[in-house]
Amino acid sequence: MILRVGRKWAAAVVIVAALLAACGEDGGSSRRRPGQAQSLRREGEGPPCRFVDDIPYHNIFTTCIEFVYDGIAPPEAAPEIMGLAFGPDGTLYMARTARGEIWAVRDEDGDQFMDDPFRVASDLDLPVALAVFEESLYVSSVGGLLRLDDGDGDGVFEQQTLLVADLAADTGYWPGSVAVGPDGRLYVGLGADCVACDSGADPQPGRVVSYALDGSDARTEATGLAYPADFAWHPDTGELWIVDRARPAAAGEAGPPDELNRWTAGADYGFPACVGEREPDSRFAGDAEACASTEAPRLTFPHQSSPSGAAFYPYDAFPHWEGALIVALNGSRNRAEPAGFALVAVGFADGEPTGNVGQIAPAHTHGETISVPEYSLAGRGFYPFHPVDVVVSDEGWLYLSLQEGRILRFRPRPPD
Image (tube, rainbow, N blue to C red; front, side, top):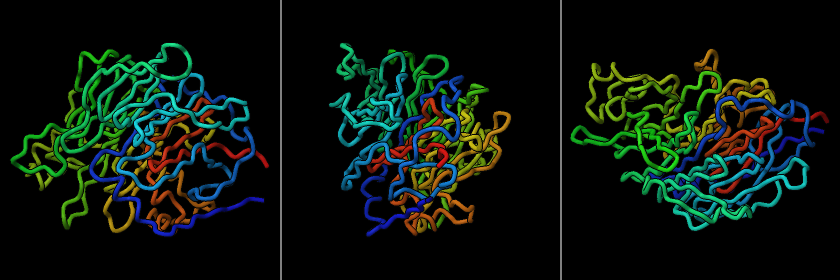
C-alpha cells in the first residue's frame, strides 16, 4: 500500500525571523568535481522506502524522501545545520553552525541507511560551508577560511589551520560556498559590503574569490554580485555557474529577481547599479548604458526565492533530472506569500539552461498545478523550514540540509 503523508503546523511563521536576519544563511555546493558522474546503483535498486511524517509532497511513485538526521531544535540566533560535503569513503559531513562544530554520518553496517551522527570538529566560529579535498576538510566560516586535518587517523579533525581570516562582510553577510575547483584552487563566495545601496555609496560588490590551497594568492574570479551563495562546475563544459541572491525589496516594489549566472572571465554582473536582466537599479541611480555592458543572468528566480545550494546532476539514478542543476531555494524572509522553500531542477542542454525549472519537492504525485505558496501555507512543503545545501552521493541520491536541524535524502523508489 502506498502511504501519502502530510504535515501539521501549529504556528507556521514563528521560526522564520530569528534565523534569517540579514546574516547569510547559505551553505556549500556538491563538492563533486567534473567527471565524477557514474551512478553505482540504478533506479529501482536499494532498500525499501522508510515512510516518515513531516516531509514535503513529492512523487511517491518514483521517489523516496527519508530522514538522514532529525534534530529540530527551538529557534536560535544561528542556523543549526548549513553546509554538507561527502568524503571519498561516503561519509557525509555537516556544518552545525550554531554549535560551532562539524558532525558526520556514515553507513557503518551496510544497510544503505546512515547510522548515528558523531562530532569530528569543534570550537569553530559559525561554520557555514564544507569541502573535502585530499583528506583535508575545508571550512568557510564567519571566523575565516580553515583547513582541518586528522593527524592521527582517528576520524576527528583536531588540527585547525586558519588560511584566510574573517570572511564576513560588514553588512552581516556570511561567506557562501567553499569548493576546490578543477584547477586545484579554493573558491569561496563572499557577500557585498552593502545591502540597500544608494548613489553616494562606494561598496565592494559580492564576488567569488579563489586562493591557493594554503590561502595565498587571492584572485577575484567574479564580481558585481550581491550574495553568491553557491556555485558549481558543469561536468561536461567545466564552466562555473553561480547562484546569486538579490538585494532586499524597497518599500512598494516587487524586488529584483535572484539569478543564475555563468562565469565569464572579466565580466561584471551588475550589482549594485543593475539588477535582473541588466535593468538600472533605481536605488543606486544606475543608468541603462552602463547596465548594457554588464553580464546578464542566464536564468532568474522569483524575488526572495533565495537560492542557497547548487549541484549538477550528471547521474542516471533519476533519469528525468540527468544533466540538470539541482538548486535548493532557502525561502523568503518578509514576503506576504512565501517564495522559495523548494528543491528544484534547472534543465540544461548543450551546456546552457533550457529555461525549464521543475520542482522536485514540494510536488504533487499526480502532477496537479499548485503554487509554492499554496504548498507552504497548506503544510505540504518545506515551510517554515529552510532548505540550505544539496549534495549528491555516488549512488546519484540527493541529500538536502534544512537549517533548522534536518537532513533529508531523496532516492529512487525501489519496486514494492
